[in-house]
Amino acid sequence: MESFINALSGFHWALLGAAAACIGGGIGSAIGITYIANVAGGIITEDPDKFGPMLPLVGIPGTQGIYGFITAVLVTVFFGLLGGSGPKLPTVVGFQVFLACMPVAFNCCVSAIYQGLTSVGAAPMIAKRTEEAGKALILPALVETYAVLSLIATILLLLSVKAGMG
Image (tube, rainbow, N blue to C red; front, side, top):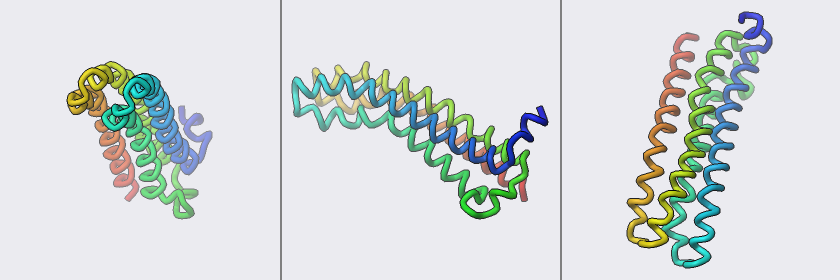
């Protein structure tokens, strides 16, 4: 296992973790938004006045991509990857950073997809009764809880790694 970890420098492990978080959240968000956008497009075609009420439902799976981006920014700032101390980051610390990014990388990818599918299930509420848009948004927002928890876990893990360096 040690030779596997040492195959990359700490700088590279940290970059890989930041990239995985950003990529995972982005892929999941793109897929989740696509699912609900396809349904929303049909609803809006039938009734263009539904665009405003449908927009939050279409946008909500995009938040996981933001969480991945936030994670990547935190890694680059916390560990000096932008011309700071990043290249000198010990390998074991870089690997810890990589592992700390995994909750966001995996959970945001999966939760964004399922949030898009949950939004698809909620869209008919808006199609039939626009005044129910707030209730319709609650359903996919429940999925958001787990994306937020993974972001909090990743932030706590990154702070733990940072504290362990000092």
